[in-house]
Length: 167
Image (cartoon, rainbow, N blue to C red):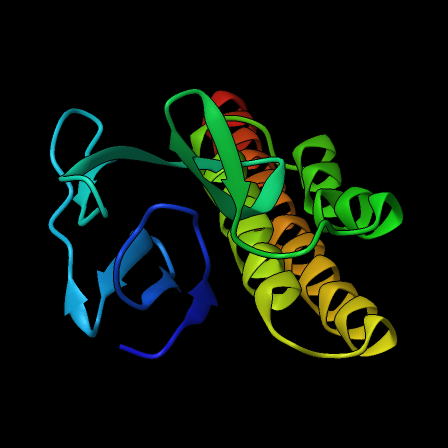
């Protein structure tokens, strides 16, 4: 399992975390993937020096990196992301201005998910901003196409009704 190495006091073995797109974070100890349990499945048992340790793996939409919580203490899985990059990560929310409803929400959440993946990658900040700009342009472009198609459909429906009324 390729991922980022973690060091948590009291945990025995090499702990790694991998973020799987659309599935969430995955933890492994010494290469063996830990099976999460619970609903949502975010609880894992880690091998500890004094016996098993219960941990919770939390992902949040406003933060690209998950957090491991043990006994009320949070252990970050990556360095903090600068606030301007977090704001830019949420830029696809502007797409809800064009297309609202279920389709708009799905497109926006997909754009935010892709931006989180971009922020997790070990790239310079200017490259991350460039990729997030491409994602924003793609989300807004698809939103615009959907809005145009919907508008043309309504215009066509209205013209058909108008022509039927004149006949």
